[in-house]
Length: 51
Image (cartoon, rainbow, N blue to C red; front, top):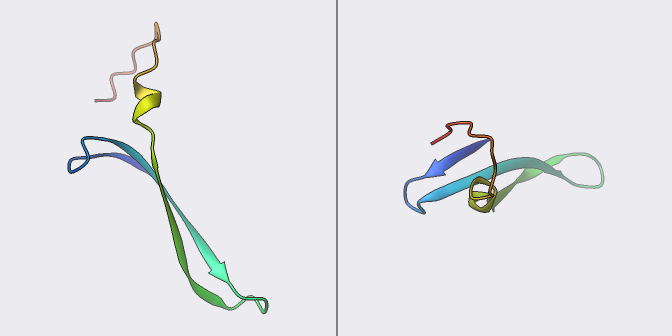
C-alpha cells in the first residue's frame, strides 16, 4: 500500500512479507518501507492529481 506520511511529509510505499522457517512455520512479518516521493517529483506532461 502507499500513502502520504503526515509525519514525514512525503509518500511512502509499504510492503509486508511473511517470514517462515525451514519447515514452513510462520515466524513473523517483515515490513519494507520505501520513500517513493521522488517518483511524484518526476517531470511529466501527465497530471494524475494524486495529492
